[in-house]
Image 1: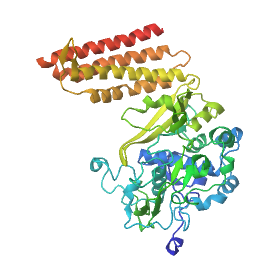
Image 2: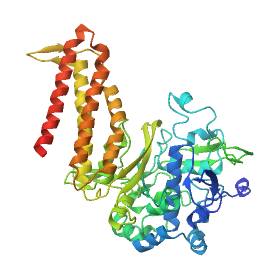
Image 3: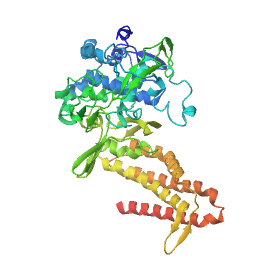
Length: 520
């Protein structure tokens, strides 16, 4: 333990570790300067996933140290920065939790991890060390050495948002690659750039909501420490309802221990000159969590299976854009068989009126993975017009409409490839599978229209916006069909398949129009 006692502290509570961009300049500020309003700006990191995780980490620290008593106190925090005395009082008993080099309870680490060899830092950056395309996407040496700021964010991100490191390593409390949702402040004439301090408070839950709605066991578990401070026993079975707020937000599912930072150098991620961490030790550690912990920044879906409620957190499982999942992220629905619960911070915004503007702006992020391998990083912004909270059926209908036109195109392209064969008719397909290309192009060309529809729609009178969207989607589908099949029009053996596909597309589009006419 002696070598750790000699390490220079790197505390997230008083070190200048937060990179901000303000009026064309990047500056590094302390957590106190940020919450006390002494410095402001927008978080500035070169990777979108680390930027999202950085905000998420700041929200977690704030939620743990400064949980407001009620709506009134939360509104006061949004309006006015903390005083120095308020800040020092809030962090007083938490200083040992947030020191990256603490000799006994280092942030998100366990002391004394035994490993046959150290692990390079690229394993802490999702998608850098794995994947067949890594040499083309990630330049050589991207994670050769990380500063304390990037290391702390990467540790937190790995624990909360990334797939586990493979067999024997546990994943986060929310599963493998959950979607994280953060409320951001709507941009107005008076607010031209979101204020990071206010963004943090918009994603903090107050005690009344925690105790009465989100986490009925909040008070009983309020004194719990993170599991890297008060470790889990090997093989232990833990009920999710026994995990307190601080313990859950700062949950570390694996046993990691950073090797001491070496000589000063240039951080491979943010380019700041600082002492660099170049490796860590890791070890497998087994335990079981029973049930789902209600994370404040995540929506949940559930199904009733054999009389039992089975919950899970939405994740990115396909290349489809985030708007296809928007309904389950913002609309609360429940039936006798299934349901969906938006993120607690979104429901708090809906119910408590924390912002004067009635429209909602938020960001979602996460990863698409195949087991331990990250296939794709996702980071998307959304804006919902005034009325979103009362008109979930309109949101659902827009998503349904967007997917229906995509399905019409895919069905036609499938018939072009496979043809048909039944008792009365046989048409040989082309054998050319264009379905995935059609899906990808459709989403690329229509995504902005769908986003604009959500942002600009009058939810009380939605038909003009929806009708305009339908026209755009129909035209796109027709153009994409012609574009994708054009190379095969001169092949006589493919003409019948092409005619079959065209008839299918026309029929599907006519049926979609008939539904519209009937609804009107």
